[in-house]
Length: 401
Image 1 (cartoon, helix red, strand yellow):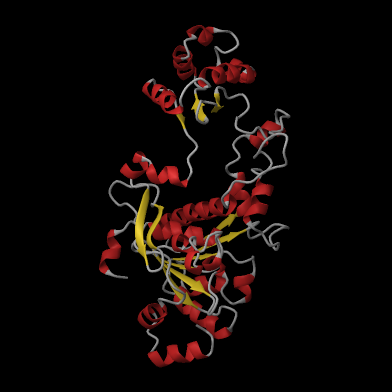
Image 2 (tube, rainbow, N blue to C red; image 1 turned 90 degrees about the horizontal axis):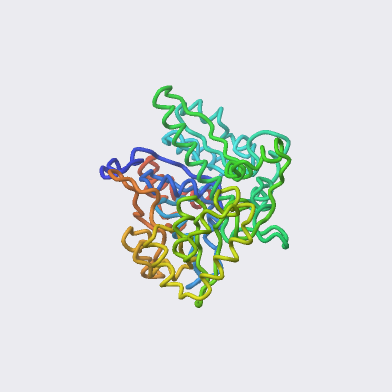
């Protein structure tokens, strides 16, 4: 690690990322964003399939890979062979964290299980991201984010009530599992400061989704209420919906009593705030459709820009449903540097979302875009592990790296 790395919030950490696709690597991305040295281990010749993923591929290159692999170093290593496994153990002896998302038991079969790794590096944090967790009857099953979303409950409640369950347009389950894996890793690192010992962080896709499901479980168990798909609204929360204007829909969220009172006054109907149908949170929820009709009647005759200005000026939360082009042109995104640009060798100016959350004294930073396959073999194997040029050549010829 270079001297400047220690000025970064996680700059004293070395993370080895094994596995591929999205959930585990998203955890690695988050840690790398805040300065950890993330060494990504990829199969020789092919690399992580994420190098090929994405709908649009200008120049035959993925637009996803430069983001998911940002701030990472790439080394190639055949983990299925004994030579590669031995080299992996040497590498992990120098690591603070291992992030992996193979099926449970895979690392153990390769002689890289927690018992073996902790024998050589007792402080190693082993962060394991899987579909179903490291134990339980479903643990051996293959698990993708879509299955975790369905099992964790979010698919059932997403979409319109008259349609089958839908999905978000992103890989929500994978990214939640990666986010919770990063959180668990930081907690384990904090505990290590007191104990000196590493531990296992077990992040399951379905449980990451389940953790977001609010009061869904006790609503069924205690109250006998099954949450269903409700489209653009939440049951018993009103007014909070999408409303028409002359030139497109606007979101308005005025479900708090004081905000609803302000909205009623703006509508020229202050008496509605005291109407028994709408005066309380519970009453508005019970009469949400009637209330939405009244608000829609008012908004439909207005231009969206003027309506939004009026709502903002009077403290009523409101906004538009943004697309990428809206984000790129928005002054607030620009002022907070929510989107940044780095130079890419094929794409040129490459825009992407910035590091989040923001820290006042030790912020994260996107230092590099996703690396080429094996770009850092010489740096890591030659520099960190002190392999000679001849040894590197032999390993390469054998297909180990």
